[in-house]
Image 1 (cartoon, helix red, strand yellow):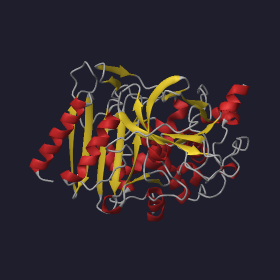
Image 2 (cartoon, rainbow, N blue to C red):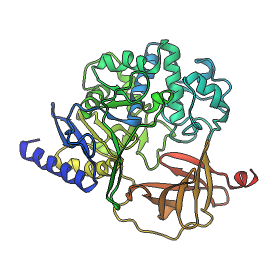
Image 3 (cartoon, rainbow, N blue to C red):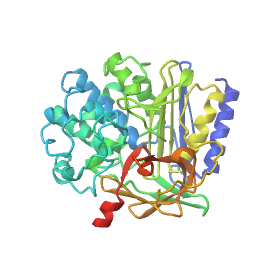
Image 4 (tube, rainbow, N blue to C red):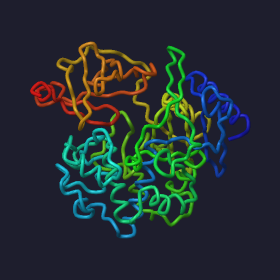
Length: 439
């Protein structure tokens, strides 16, 4: 990539950041054995501290990549077995309903059938959380039969890491993954939390509001989303997992399973496939693997093209960074960066009549999605999105907070053809109107 192309890409990123009202961004690209970075804006709205390439940004669910790498490293050492039920490998899991056949492979690929989240988290440790909330973790599908994104699944993997290593999750992933790879990361919560982590922001472009927000994650949820990293460090992590950097963390077979699409993992609306810790984006020469993450008011994206060694990382200190990334990622190949992405929202949204019988309540664990007759979707009675029906029981989603139409979902029919399931953000929710009415 020559200087003029880099200048054009830098200008495009600055324009997109202004358009989406994102206070600060980091973009780092490693391609053709060279790495370059560009930043825009400030670390916190209303302050004049420039965003730098060393600022640590809460990366949300990109943390799961590190948890997955730790689990696979322990598998490689013979301390865990990918295909043996978790209840036979880690004490204290036998009481979880519908959990008997769940393996680490299921958990890593989000095909365990477990719900996304527990109820309000107050437990101080993962072990206590399982004792207090495990009985309420009602499965949404049988293990291995469907994809349903699960934070709970990664908390269980974190619990396994703690049991095997004898360390808490933060110390274990630092010792097993981060330090050996030379990756610097901060914590957003817990005893070792870094007060210097970049602030997140909410953005409402229609009202012209940009507001700093604090991270609400609890320490017990760390394995699913507690890390903060710069885009530079994300690229370092990505190069190792793409096999471009010599390291002793994972063998080639484990890396292949981490990056390859697992059977039965259909992450509708999120990616084109899902491996043991990494998503698959696109197809052909541009096929990439990686992960997205959203903290409270932050957005992070990691993409790797193992065939070319190209790695791209992007962070933004606003939730609107998600929509910014979608636009930017689609344009990267035109700048000579061979990376594919998954944008489920069609270029032209062509509404169709709403399907019959769609309105009602759908549940994923303790989370209740309600679809009203006016096509407003609420989550636990809070406004979430306005839906535009599309063909094939799909719908586009206009976020109630940001005003962005940047996600899709779908209804899945039951035996009678009526919508029996809702899938939003990769999470499956089962129709529960009758159950709620009886309650």
